[in-house]
Image 1 (cartoon, one colour):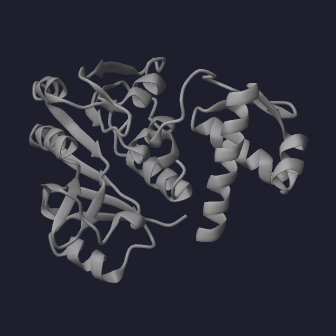
Image 2: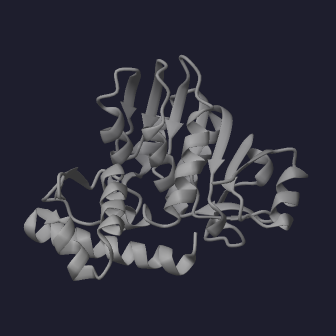
Length: 259
């Protein structure tokens, strides 16, 4: 996707969200005139926002789904590289098997998996508020929710109580996002998030990393794993040849999504 167009789309949808918070309902024709784009572009924006759980579309417009909820940094991160994340999430969901016990990370890409979970009986354990909301009415899912203090920046519970609770589970697969990935140094996130991920990874048979190309080549404060610690890494086709080589030489299954 063209990065300028992607940025413009994000800014436009932020504007739509602000209008929704003010008036609860918006209309395609009004938005088209106000934002200077076609009706088709506005309908596409509303469709994306509906899939993210922000609003409900109806003939001629849309109504906010949670009129009293504040806009969070986690909500805005859902917008970044949306098409790549969606394609990665869809592929990840294909790896779930009947009766699996899986961990779904409080990650924007992992959250998108909830739209593609298979019609198979399985158990979901999560610390993500959004994942919990998406899975709570799925008849195929037995849902466990990790306790702890809610962290706005991550969209989920994240403290010592969260870590202690998750340490009691055995997972068939853990689906994890990340802050950044450096294919030489390793995979990194914030301190508490990294500590929780390490607990989950120790208890999981298969560790699956979902990461779009924008996260590569950088690292932050704390490493929670080396490349070799993951059974599978799912990413999009904009990953560099060098990063592909560094992953494959560690005998990790690299799943590159073209969309």
